[in-house]
View 1 (cartoon, rainbow, N blue to C red):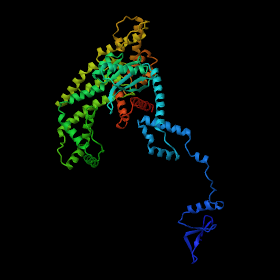
View 2: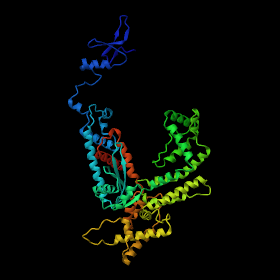
View 3: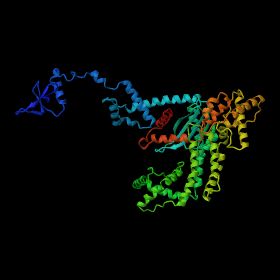
View 4: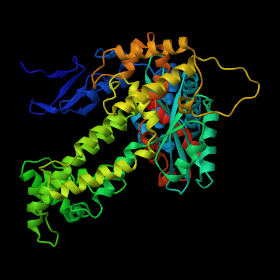
Length: 573
C-alpha cells in the first residue's frame, strides 16, 4: 500500500478535492504549514528542528555551538609552529621567493587541508626569522663537521648576477671519520674589487679564516683562468686545475676550422629553424609522432656549454627523417646535411662520446674524482689514436685534439694527481704511467711518510706555510729504522688486492684505514680533492633561482644565506 505520510507521520501529502493525493505538497501535522516536496526531506527536517524541536525524533536535539567547541576546530599552536617551520624550510630549500607566503592560493590550500577556515599564513617577517634561525643552525652544524675533518679541499669560481654584481662561490670537500665524502657550500660572497691575483688570494683566505679551516685546506680546484693560476702561486695550498675545462677546450680547438665546419653549420641552421618558431616546432613534433619516434626538442649548440655540440649532433641524427618531412611541408632555404656530412658527424659523435664520458666522470661531488684524472686521460689518449680505418678528417681531428691535450699537461698538478692515483686502491698499479714515473710516485710517497713520522722541531719563530708537495722535494737524512718502517707500510699497501673499477675507494679505506694508518692520513688529503671546479659552478646555477629579475634587489647577505642554506638542506636529503 502506498504511504501517505513522511518522517514518521510528521508530514502528510495534501489531499485534493477529488480525494486524490498531491505528491508535490506536504502538510505539517503539528502546525498545518504547507511545503513543496520534491523527494528531498531536508527542508522538512529543518522545519521540525526550528519549530517543533521537542517532537523531532528523526535527529538528536541540536544546541547552539559553544565558543570552546568552535575553537576546537582551529589549528592548535603546536601544529601552526610546525607548519610555519615547514614552509620556511620549503622556501629555503627550493629557493622560492619569501613573498609566496602572501599568496592567497597557498593560504586557501592550507585551509582546505587543515579544515581550519580561519587559518592565516605567517608573515614575511616571521618566515625570514625562521630562515635566519635555520641558517644559523645549519651553519653551526657544517662548521662542526669541518672542525672534525682532518683535511679539506676547496673549489672556487666567480660569477656575475643579473644585477651585474660579482660573486665568488666556494665549496668544501672532505672525508668524515667514517670515510663518507661530504660536500658543502661555504659562501657566495659578493666581491667589489677587480679580480686581480692579489685580490683573489685575499678572497679565498678570507673564506678559509671565516670557517676556521685555514690550516686544514690541502688543495684548491679552479678553472685555468690566468688570475686563478697567478693567485694559486701565492696561496699556501695546492692548486688543481679543472680537467673538464681542458677537455672542453681541446674539443673546441679541434673543431675550429675543421672538416666538420660545413656539416655543423647546417646542423646549427636546422636547429635554429625549429627552435625559433613555435609553428615549425609543432610540425616537427607531428612528424616525430608520424614516424613513431619520441617527441623531443632539438638542442642548440652553445660554445660555453660542455658537450652541447655532441647533443646537437645526436638529436639531429635521431630525427633525420622527421626533419626532412617537416622541411618538405614548406620549402625553405634551410639545407639538410648531405649523406656524406651525416657520416662525418656520426664519426664525430663517436669520438665526442668519449669526451662526454670523461667530463661526467670527473664532475661528481659525492664520489672520488681526483684519482680518476690520469686513468681517464690515458683512456682518452688511447681512443684518440688514429687507426687505419679512420678517414683523413678524423685523423686530423684526433691529432689536433691530442696535441692540444698534450700541450696542457704542464698546467696540470701532475705531482698531486699521481699521488692521488696511487692512493686509490682501484688504480694503485699505476698502469696509466710509465715505469720510471711509477717509481718516482712511490718515492714521493715515501718522502711524505717519513716527513709525517719525523717529529716537528720546537721553534718559537713560526716558518711560512709550505705547500704540501714541497715536502716531497726535501732532501734530509733519515734513519734506517724510519726507512724500514715506511717501506713496510708501502709494501703492505701494495700487497692488498686491487678492487674493481665500480667499487668505492672510500669504502675500501673505511675497512683498511686501521691497518694502513699513515697512508690513510694521506688518502684523506689527496682523495678528497675534486677533479673539476664544477661544484662551485653548480652554486651559480642555484643562485640563478635566487637572484632573478624580480628579486634583483636582494642584499648580498641574503643571497649568500639563501644559496648556502639551500645547498646544505639538499645535501641532507
